[in-house]
Image (cartoon, rainbow over all chains, first blue to last red; front, side):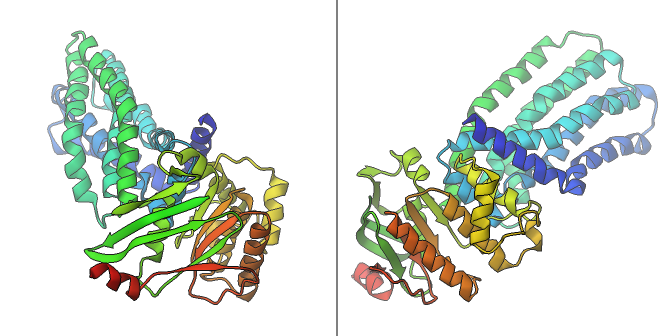
Length: 223
Length: 212
């Protein structure tokens, strides 16, 4: 079972590394949106600091949303998804492998580049640390919950709008708590509560989302 | 081995078949026949458990395939219309990726042997996107050959194959039957199998019976 997880993870990472331009898309989007904001508003450091948590979190969320399509689309189009569903291994494990690969390829790069953008938006260093933690806890949830939506819409042509409608309401709590944690930290207040909430949501998503995704995939395949 | 009990399939409000029952024993080769749109692919997907039937059961070794899922999938291999081939992976990696879904780790020599058998020797390191559609189908043949499955479910396996490819598929099926394996397949191309073969007929007649 672990082997099946590992093999699929490696396969997806290898496929992504051979298709690098696609890999860079969410990251470039993220950096572009965040760097364009100060140009459009009065770039005083107070103004930037006030809006930095929101801007960074919204951009990260949209970057993940834009990359979600990649999660199952190719496998659905070429029939590999059928083979995954016919695997003697639990489909949940395989879904988890695909979501892990997705997070490593989109979420993790965002977490790595975020501190730089935080400093650029003149966030204090304590807030930058919290930004890293909140993204580290929040972006896996975005991938996990996104997988449910993608598995329901992968068979729909141009399902992008539908996907956003399904997913965004579920993303909103993550956005609120993630951005709020950074906001509160830049005021020098404790943020344990927000981070604990994000951690709890991550644990919940980790245990339930793969199950929901595999059920949704079976429904999609049955059409 | 495999038992189909009074299956019924409806697609877009049209009844494709109902009350369909048959069994597949060891070393049996069964062809599903019928015109386009008669539900051959739907039937095969129901047998695989990829699609839900409106009514009826599919039993593997006497147990429903949802109950015996793990054992069933370990002993069954399916190829459908789609090639399952990744353009960015090499032929060898593609075969490995397919075998990994079945948790089979075979040696490179073994895989190369199968690739040579399907006429893809020296193609191991060629990327999938450089292959013709016939060659992609041949990768699937190598996968079926290596899958160690007792039951082969082949949906139009001859698509895009040339004359030698068809002959290869025929000989593979015969060898598999000789080894005690079973095959369920559909095809619109003439497959000359030099062995005992049964068939299930889908189509207008079945549909009319259902409508009454």
